Image 1 (cartoon, rainbow, N blue to C red):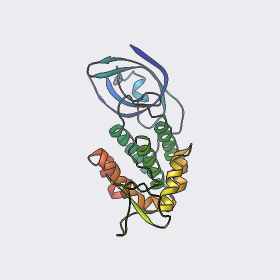
Image 2 (tube, rainbow, N blue to C red):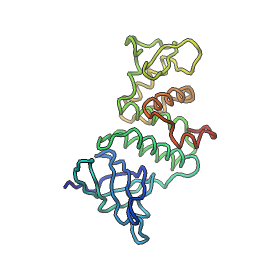
Image 3 (tube, rainbow, N blue to C red):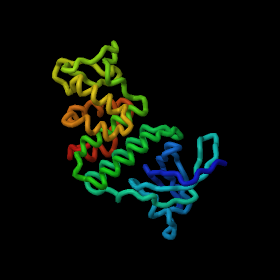
Length: 249
């Protein structure tokens, strides 16, 4: 049996396991995505009940054992670890979109500290600065997520021939083709914009750097990242359908 203590974590999703317990899908900083049993969490007297909620930073202790069907973890204790309040309104739906994205793309047990830090910062901005340009923030997080998971090509060169980008030429990110020069007026970015994004992704604070690099390019980047994500997701997310009418996500 293995144990971890004081682990930073966020709840991505939860669902009933029995009359009194929950299965919780967690995103931890040092151990990646974990599925854990929260015994008695549905009881009115359980402190788990008010703590195991999405979009708030937690600190938890848990243990797990390796079984044939995979790793089974059990939450031993949990407490809030500070951070901003849970966002409301459109920022709340944006946070739930991030959770669904992570639950679908992250492989259980693979640690991604850079993604965790970018996610935590994104939630901080959503909660503490709701006036921040939501589209720019979400596009920046999607870029960091895809890049950290190895799902994004080198954005400083053309994918097919690895030739440098022309600063004034237009390029589109196309699933299974990578970064490709276009002439037909489809949504695209200039070579200069792609180079700025590539540099931002290599920066120590990639999320903030991407937000600065995107600027007015976020709207043109949105359908390209949507197509890239759909290629790996295989189906539209529930939160995307929910927010389609608001044209926010």
